[in-house]
Amino acid sequence: MSFETESRISRTTPSDNTSTHTRYSTTRSHTLIEAVVWWVRAWRAVRSRTVGAVRWVGETVTPAGWVVVASVALLPVGLVFGWAEFIVAGSVGVALLLIALPFLLGSRAYAVEFALPVDRVVAGGEVTGTLKVTNISSTLELPGRIDVPIGQGLSDVHVPLMRAGAVHEELVAVPAYHRGVIDVGPVTTVRTDPLGVLKREVAWADIHRLFVHPVTVPIPSTSAGFVRDLEGNPTSDIVDSDMSFHAIREYAPGDGQRNIHWKSTAKTGKLMVRQFEESRRSRLAVALSLRADEYASPEEFEMAVSAVGSLGIRAIRDGRDVAAFSSDEIPEFTRGSMRSIRTLNVISTRTLLDDLSAIAQSPTAMRIEDVCQFASQVIPDISIAFVICGSTMTASRIHSLSLKFAPSVSIVAVLCDPTAEPRYRDLAGTGVLSIAVLDDFRSLLARKAG
Image (cartoon, rainbow, N blue to C red):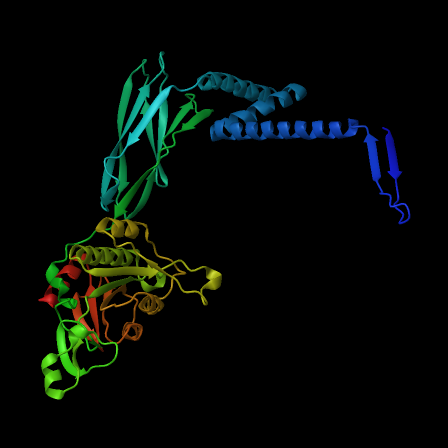
């Protein structure tokens, strides 16, 4: 290794007005640098291939295969120490690996298609999907297996020996017994030996999402007797333009000329204008409790979700302004200082039920009182609020709901309690509907509306 340095310095003096130029040049052998670069590249290549090999082994060797691999490791020990048992176990392991390896050679020439007839279903049934496997090669394909992930479960489909161009179809049942969102897929072809020592998987990218909607009941339109219509009861708010006439007052700057009452103006000699009582279009709000300790059982929560779906569907089909909301997920460390609500999509009945399919209880959700108070601040013009909750709600907590909304808002609390007697009662100005089954909700609303 050698170093050579050359430097030149020129200085400027005021007398001769000369310029100063400085140059430094260094020459050095690059042998060490090139060696370091080569070793780094080699190390990266070895590490990448090692990681890939380890991943391949982890994906290829089954739990039973690891037992075989462990037995193979006994062979050199038996040969060194002359232990016949280890030699036999190691020899058997080697034989099993040699038998299994040919089944993994080559590639599985399958074209796999999976289809669901629907992407939405009501809880309580099942959907039957169709799995279509086509041999796209020009040779025979050995029997194999295809795994179809269904939510947290797995369905295995056996593929028989297939000649070139053959098509095999299989029906796959997707259980939809409970409300939720089920991801079906990706479908995976599995190639393995008869003993299950080694396997080779190829996943297909398609994932089908199945929305399992909550069970709902048809609520008759007569249940809208709870709600004030546009042509219904006027409010106590006085406005300058509406349909319900209230009084005549003296004209003030800014009043519209079309509201001038000319007969009164002629009598008094002053401009007089009409006043009206505001008759607002009803806005229905539905609040769903998500807090786990506000329900005595999961069945109560499912009933509550179904009640929200039933009420929301009726309101949407009737063309009413409706807002459905619940608590958003609150992190544990900000539970005391953070408030957040989640507004459900009520553009259509389909979007509402999709959101209800994915909703779940949470121990960190806000109390229903806090949800109602926050919602009253961010959702304007609420006329009537349905608060859906469980049987653990006490009478004092139900009564406190009236303090979370404006005084003009009518409040109906729906208690989902399978052990309760279905009835409607008034609790200090707050209506309380107790339902034991979902059909009670329909009958009680119809009876109250009538």
